[in-house]
Length: 159
Image 1 (cartoon, rainbow, N blue to C red):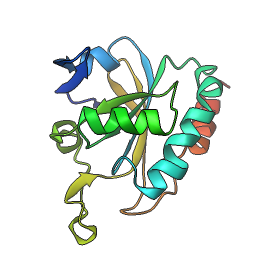
Image 2 (image 1 turned 30 degrees about the vertical axis):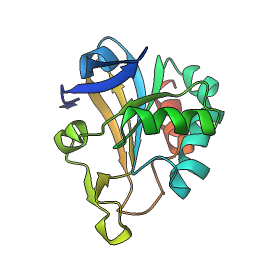
Image 3 (image 1 turned 180 degrees about the horizontal axis):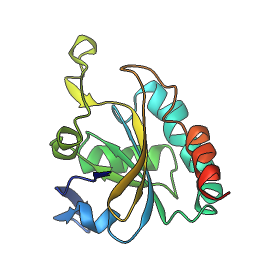
Image 4 (image 1 turned 180 degrees about the vertical axis):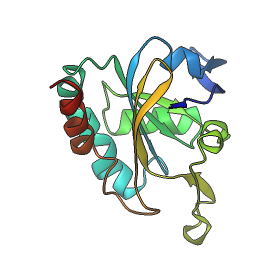
């Protein structure tokens, strides 16, 4: 079983930069986590993020404590993205330096599209730092990291 890498994320709260470790987000919690290439990109903004926002309450009914969205953007971009798309439930984790993404071995070279290095698109179910299930899309695709696939998996855990 793979453990979530322990890195420090740099967040912006109340006008200050703060660091929160992976343990803050994952320890002693059941987490649905999804990562995507970037804020404001078409698939991420039109399908991936909204699907988890729309099905947030349904997902939590399966014993999930929280849903996190990670992108390799800074906290400023993520905050504007959240406001622009009126995201009220899903929580954001900025990985602007890519430390978590590198440690997860989920880097994707998007230089051809002018995006540089970004995260692959994936989702995972984590129980107390342990990655129990990981759904990884092929580079550039959106096939298995969606909320529907995650819900179908959660159904198997709950009989």
